[in-house]
Image (cartoon, rainbow, N blue to C red):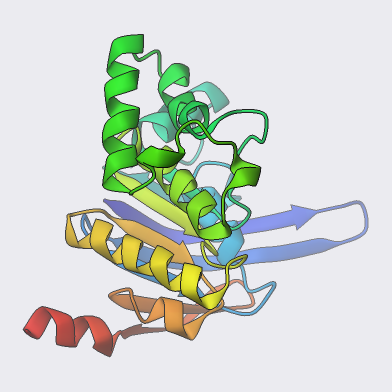
Amino acid sequence: MIQIKNLSKVFRTEEVETKALSEVSLTINQGDFVSIMGSSGSGKSTLLNIVGLLDSASGGSYELLNQEMIGLKEKQKSKARKENIGFIFQNFNLIDELSVYDNIELPLIYNNVPSSERKQKVETIAEKLNISHRLKHYPQQLSGGQQQRVAVARALINDPKIILADEPTGNLDSKNGNEVMELLTDLHANGATIMMVTHSDYDASFSQRTINMKDGAVISEKVNQRNVDVFKV
């Protein structure tokens, strides 16, 4: 599904050149759940942004579903992003002025989905994520965990090929954070492909494998025992 080879990213100013990614190579297959870890400045968020087509690489190759993404024009990247990728952010990125229903519906409007179909899709995903009773509420009326469920619903509404999660529990207490991780685990069990950036060893343990980064490079990769045990049962 995702094939990255020798990916690099350099940020330049008049005085300084900073290498954010250095010759990163990575494969994510359909149905994988992969965590990316590393300290601040390790390059993990830069990598996620490039995979999500929110940023451009300086060199190397990034294939999504056998199509090269490096060098695409902005309009082409936007199309590929809308058709294939769902985002879950640390800060939820919900629009306070819109109801829960309207927040979830928004990506469907951008994709020109007919009104009747939008209603059915929103109601179906809301029921699946146990937020049907909150559709008329506004984000500020919800708990952090409920807001993240709304964000997950919005990420899933267009049936993306891959879910990119950027510190999805970073602003949640342990109870709500655990609920979100269990939700991601359920999505993965039902076939979702997930790439998650996290600082948390506990959150990473829910994934199949963890990739560690430092100074813009991949330094190690391991299979997570929790998932090995689960799949053996």
